[in-house]
Length: 333
Image (cartoon, rainbow, N blue to C red; front, side, top):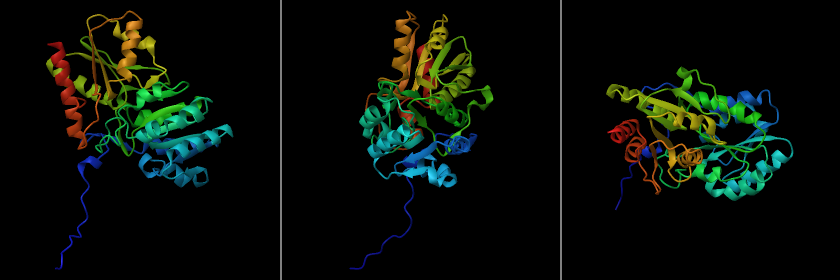
């Protein structure tokens, strides 16, 4: 019996959508790729390395301009990290890209032994951090910050938006030592431009003040925190937002100063499991300093997350603006 085959192209599922920009939100395209190419024009020892993901980490822009300084290692993340260590020993400054799950889970021991132990000048810039993909546990790096925080010599950064990524690239290049940075790729929201923001390695920044609630956040959750603060204004809830892009070393001085101001609920918001990330780092900092405000966490659960469309998943796991606002209002009631 003959069979008719449907030759229509398969539609992409909503789980493939990796952008976290809202409808109509201002974005900039590939800030990391452009910033790295700009850096490499004057810093001749910068090289770009990836494991079959140049296009999907925006490193293809660097490769187009500097093909002789671009290394495609194939689907071999352990080899990628070992080779980066070798280049660093010879005086190069490798910027290494892959997905965060592959860097932190698949190649962890190679980073630990080949890069971190020798305190080598390798910058690992990893895409799809936390819940920024709907592809399920195989691609959702919900525990990457906890893993990299635990590694000696490693600086850990969770940037918020396009502006911060653009500023982060030359800042980490100026820092001598290994860095793990989360990466937002493609069309990345532009959030911090209106706050006269400048990234400084190791420093937290108070983006807005407020008398009722202090949200301490990193990465995309700073965007969500700012949106939540604006949403709660309608209910006469005054929300401060402290952005903490550097998870390690932590700006303990600023965190303690802001958290010890009396009368405010302190909420840590992170796009990461509540185990071992910013929330636990802040809690340890405050308890060690004897600062004990009313304290809550917004983060991903200690669980394997579902696959699906990002807006649905962000609502389900409590990191969307609407759910954050509702949660905080409930805590204040």
